[in-house]
Length: 284
Figure 1 (cartoon, rainbow, N blue to C red):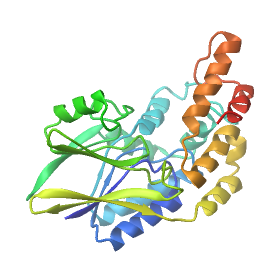
Figure 2: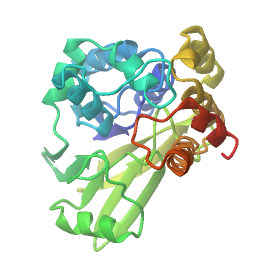
Figure 3: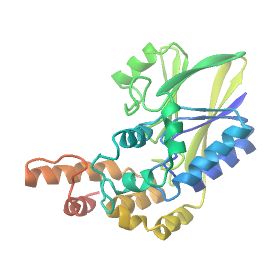
Figure 4: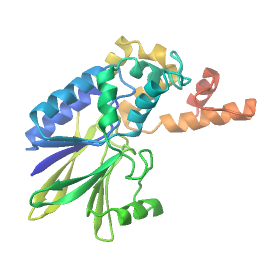
């Protein structure tokens, strides 16, 4: 029983296409998806169509990531959130939402934040995006909150995503696996990442996969879709991360907010003037 485990696609259709082909070539015949399906890239609908087509052909399990909550909450608030197009902080949120349809958001609303998967002849698995208790919680090897989550799970294998880094951690007889990110991997030198789990003699083994794909094609698609206009500095950082796998976005965001607060006395996301992004870019 070989199952491909993928997370954090972030709208990167070229990377998703390559990872699916690689997984099938390696003998996977089922898929687990750990959330954050779209954001940051120019073809969110193509990603969703690819996922819908895949689940018609193969067993697939999906859960909701923190990005899915953005789209659900925005629709439920009658689009009243402060998202502005042509803005580095929220331009890509605005663009992505307006390039999804109601079918996509309906689908996201059906997804649980975490779930337990039961198999015949194989141990059960807990799957989540951040953690089973919070979709944007970061689980990192050795941290106290990671140990708490593992202790609370009633399965020996837990699959999580969210940090965009590929790793395995064992604690108190349990194993936590992060397959890395398909669409915006960190620390991978630009390669897309996922994992394959395989049930052998009643226990799960994990194989980590890094797959080369045409990053420059994706960057060309970004430019052709005009995304640098929709979110100027955010897209600049996205291109850097795609090429070298370094985590620029959050550092730049925190720096921009700090500069904004220092000068204005207060800074509330997403109301960050572009001049602070321009200054932050020089520091990352």
